[in-house]
Image 1 (tube, rainbow, N blue to C red):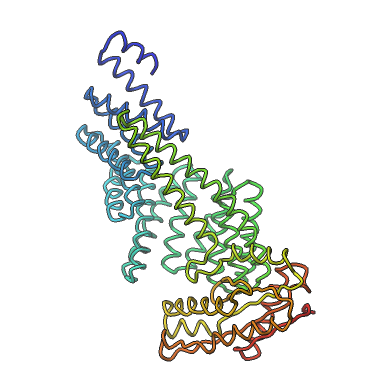
Image 2 (tube, helix red, strand yellow; image 1 turned 30 degrees about the vertical axis):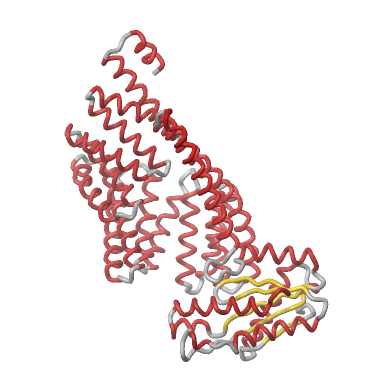
Length: 526
């Protein structure tokens, strides 16, 4: 590239310009493969413009493809799509069938990312006959698998809009396509490629509600993933297996799901799979909660919390680097007379980044439905309260009685209204004496400091009365809501989580005693 630029100083010729364009395209391709995306865009765009000036359509099309893919990797989907569409039109004009098919697949992926599943499926369908005719099993299987994934995405959107028959039709089509992709992938020797085809099939089967088929697919995939040097695919397979077993919840499923998640946990730790580890610990927390092991759930969630903090920190750094890379692309592509405009854009980006950071911080601490402190926030707050004054600390758990029946009778939307109203009632009952948070589902956690033991039972009574005496007719005319409360004095326990466990046990005692009552203790549970 440098040699070509030096030659151009002495003589301008198409031959030297073409050599420079080829060098730029090659360097841009290298930069994209090494994730130097801003540099990839700069070199590929310059190469494409030079090829266009020379009327050299084939290398221009390839350069524009690389340019578009780099833009997509930078998050500029519309910009990347525009370059790939131009590359497609050039290849169609040149009759370059192979590159036309490559463009169709790349454009299909972007359309799928943008939510245009129908267009993505149409493009994959155009490319498949060419790959099939050329016995290109790898790219044929890729198109089938991508189309299956697009149908699964389409089915989810149909389900969100209440169109269940259409959703099931898309899930069925996704399964058929995924099975064809697996059959083709088996003809090759790329084990990693084959294992990933099973992922697409399992997702479609799970969405269709066929847990038995989903489990069978994942059980077929698991021994294949164990042969791979990289362990991320194996971990993801183990998590999907555990989640499916937990959803089925037949005899023995709990133990088997726990065994799978334990193996995944060990693999994540031994292979430093930090980003994947968060999903493992989240599934482990959900499993413990589902089978009523709150202490184990809390322990798993604390580990999940630590991993998530690390991941968010790395994600913020990555997002910053991506923004910086996109700004470098803009700097390279714009003329110097747009410097003032770039400065204004930088200010706007910084403001947006601060706003996004504020939103992320709020999401990290606030339950999105009730506005109370979420698990992450109240766990940290409870630990602080313990450190501040464990001697005068009291911990409470409130659980709405027969909440499933409320959801069944009135619908989940009105059930959510009940949860929001309960959150306000709990906040009002606690007042400035303590703090409240959402434990999960229909459970709420409360703690307060008081030097007077009588205040502890008084707060429990206020919580019960607030829920039972509230006028729920504003939500539904026949609705009645009560709660059960368990509480304990924290100073008789070794940790705040031990106190929380005792409060939870007392709450269940209140349930068994008839509900709409409180049970508390100032001594440790024997």
